[in-house]
Image 1 (tube, rainbow, N blue to C red):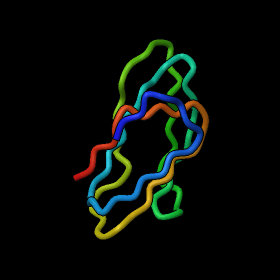
Image 2: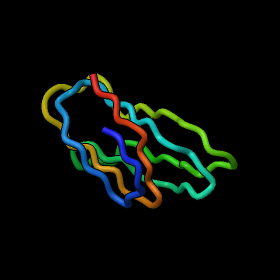
Image 3: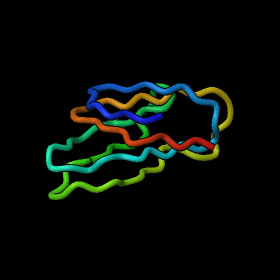
Length: 83
């Protein structure tokens, strides 16, 4: 999954055991929260003095179907890696 536009909420359904978000850190970035199956998992800040790509582990070692929700401002996901 990739996104070339900004969003304030993104939802992904997955049945993988590992999920890693690839993000774009930038001057106009912001803070957002990641939820897995409705439970807060991690907070991420993408505000930076220069633009660069960053990766963040969302979860590992889970089984079955899961829903990932990302909520916040100025979210630009470069990719979602699932295994």
